[in-house]
Image: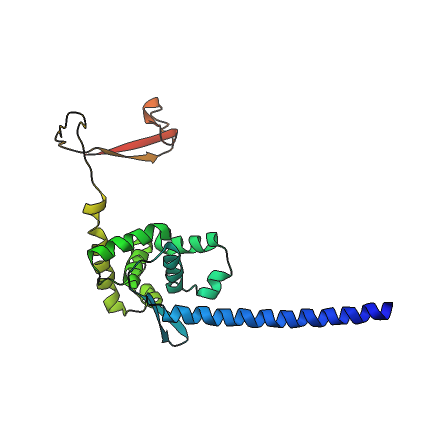
Length: 222
């Protein structure tokens, strides 16, 4: 009885080992197919630069997932590193370089494409990275590729393209919607609150800042 069980156990172990090997081969084949699909994708083209795969992508109907993957690739997180962590981690990485999530970047890219079809995704992302972190030209050159003497004018040019969306996206409309009147506003008012320590020589409730619920100063801008 014991001998029969041992033989059956050896047979099962052999089958498990064979299945494990077959599963590993399938995974490797799947990775090869995915890499081949990425290289042949009309939206994303790969080019070798040393040992690093540099991704070039034209602005097209990129999804949020595409923008997330390509953006992280430019910032040093290749596909293998992206797959080892969950979505929340990848989103935090993306926002740490560009300031906003890919759900915000993707619509901007589509609007930019409608305005100028010649724009390149990499250049726009590079400009967003510069606008958010404001790093030196040397740092940007090491991450994105262009020479230090060229990258400054390039990011400024792309930033101006983003700025052109202001008139389309930001509209301030005033007036009485019922009467159809549109009164003129000679000035706008804005405030900036500064939290401070209590003034010992002039203790008073007039220094109360309602935003921080402590003592503070308010600067008014017209």
